[in-house]
Amino acid sequence: MVAGEASGDLLAGLLLGGLKSHWPSLRAAGIGGPDMAAQGFEAWWPSERLAVHGYAEALKVYRSLVALRTELGDRLLAQHPAAFIGIDAPDFNLGLEARLKTAGLKTVHFVCPSIWAWRGGRVHQLAASADHVLCLFPFEPALLARAGVPASYVGHPLADAIPLDVPRAAARAALGLNERDSVVAVMPGSRRGEIRHIAPDFVRAAQRLHAARPELRCLLPIAPGLRPMVEAAVAEAGAQDAIELVDGRSHEVMAASDVVMVASGTATLEAALFKRPMVIGYRVHWLNWQVMRHMRYQPWVGLPNVLSEDFVVPELLQHAMTPQALAAAVLGWLDDPQACERVAQRFTELHHLLRRDTARAATDAIAQIIEA
Image (cartoon, rainbow, N blue to C red; front, side, top):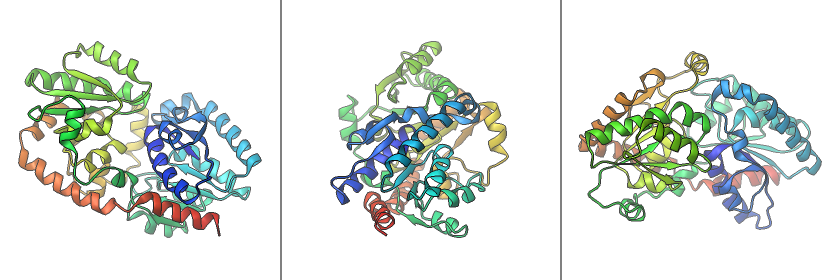
């Protein structure tokens, strides 16, 4: 198995629970993180090695990633496991899967690349790489079928892991918050590139919120290994009084919050499953933006909006993502409880749609491939 960055590690950890229920003596190894390790995964390399933010950053580490993929491929071909499962990270995993599939190994790709959003040509690479694709969203298998790619809709494991009824009171108690506090979750991302490009404006937005409403509590959960970078961003903005840093515990922070200010990515879906109104922000290196904006197929970027086919929550991208705009959008939610209730209802419907006992459904699909 190979999972890149925190979101892939989380998905893989949930999947491993299902796999071990089916095969109690299962041994899994490759590239992974702490959630996978908690399931007994043997990490030959940490998932952080694959946490690259956009094309510009990828170019800097391209040679080392190619060397890593080659070394891993050699090792897998020598050991010949029952199957290889690539968890997201398509730019790394699809090339590796193609090599393994050509050599006769069974390959599964978990998380359909967002061919419906941009880079649709990757469906042909997917066909050459994966024996089967496990899809998180219900509309994806039909898209893949048109290109002859076998696929199964397994739901989203986060929809199983996150309760339908948000444990708001328990989360607030665990974080030392009281019921009357107004709380904003500040979530600028879990990759170093995101902290560089996004965290400074998120921090300054929190500073503006604190200035406007001193009683407001802004909590920023920090992904493992990123505390020095986050602390530097907070110190540079002089925002120590405006933000409370929390090591990990992102789900508790979201459950406890009134509004989430979040970088585009899996965390936006997590916030939706916690039924939280949110403001989505994102910025990449200017070169990445020039490439990506010409390859988009639809107007939405954030997953809650993509799945709803509507701008259910605001998106502030690239130059539009300013501290002023972020803070204003957060205050807009705080000042409109009825809008918050409406978006919570839409996210509840989305939660039911994505809840499919993903670990079991994915395990059943993988078992059919391995045991065929």
